[in-house]
Length: 523
Image 1 (spheres, helix red, strand yellow):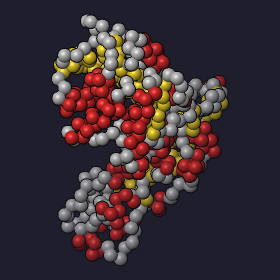
Image 2 (cartoon, one colour):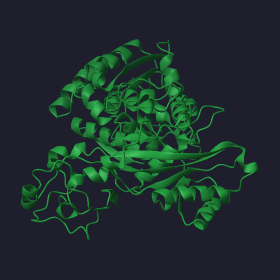
Image 3 (cartoon, one colour):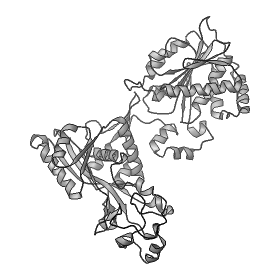
Image 4 (tube, helix red, strand yellow):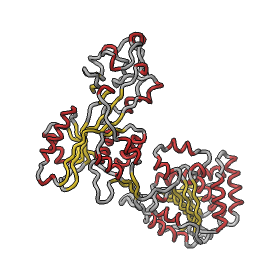
């Protein structure tokens, strides 16, 4: 399409007069270069929110309105938008309608699309499946987020097969164009392989991080959008991730293993027991205590009623205040911090007193003996509930019921594991996770991997031939935390209600947050 630059300039002027943003320099230069080459395919690796969809929709409109295509009588030429699901595909259709409305171009609805009035051209959306992209004539195919396509039934990324099916739809149209667009994902998916082929006689390639493709967004803003560094590198900095890499930063892992604070330094919340069960044929059956530790802070950090403030001016630690003169509490029973100190409620998620039954213990030890040992651990710290993955769920529930403990299993599916790993990464980076020193657990966390598969899955676990029975305790404990099952979380501690206009302290006999004789928190 030799006159593409002319049509692009005219379209931009018209759209800007209607309030649409202009194409960024990256998009303008990339599109002009691609059409100048006359090549069939453009592979784009652009960070999230980098203007991929809106820019390519404009290209689709130009091709539909001004492209030189010979459409056989009774047929229509299709500008096809292929996305991971129908909801994503329909977003492209809304953009097309907005563009056509701004240009004053008439159209009528068709199934999953719109057709130009008086011209045999349609804009239509398709889901990225092999069966869903056959049987039409394409003048342009715009593939959205190719690296993240996923088949609903198998969960695999069908990009290779889908593209093999869609290319023949352009066979009768020499001027048809194929756009493979995506943010970065792994170094081993179909989109990455196409991008890494580079410039060929068939294709052009172009890439940019979000803030280059869309200069209205700064690099700093994207880091606020995605605080997890490795995800930010993929999604915004546009750097694909190695297929297998460490799930956790080694420095952060090493920093979390340190001596536990004493009771005089704050309060430990009600604990739970976390286990990773085993059949006893080589991997370990592990268990530990998980709970929150809330450090004590100076009294001046708290919101106090005026009478209390007057009586406590000479007191510098909360633990020294008698029960009858505690600071005000919110509706959840937590002392009300002054607003400027809320982010310094430095609660820590703590794992400690890990026990492990190693090796082939199943040959000489029964499950009831293990349950009894774990019950002793629970009784020592006042825990009444056990949390685990779904492995041997039914047998374990009976075992722990017999020793008086509630049993709560979690399904270790990819969704739960991804949420837990993301939360652990943040906690490790913020130094809000504290684990009693344990060489085996530290080694396993350092070896715990994240794998991006060619089929679009993100999986987690130990490296081949190694165990993760100790590291699994942290993941299951985090699932319980995210499920709201652990009292004293920093989320509840920091998000306190506004100070009340009370004139005296709460009655300690009825307060939901009470303290024992040693000043420890009683949930």
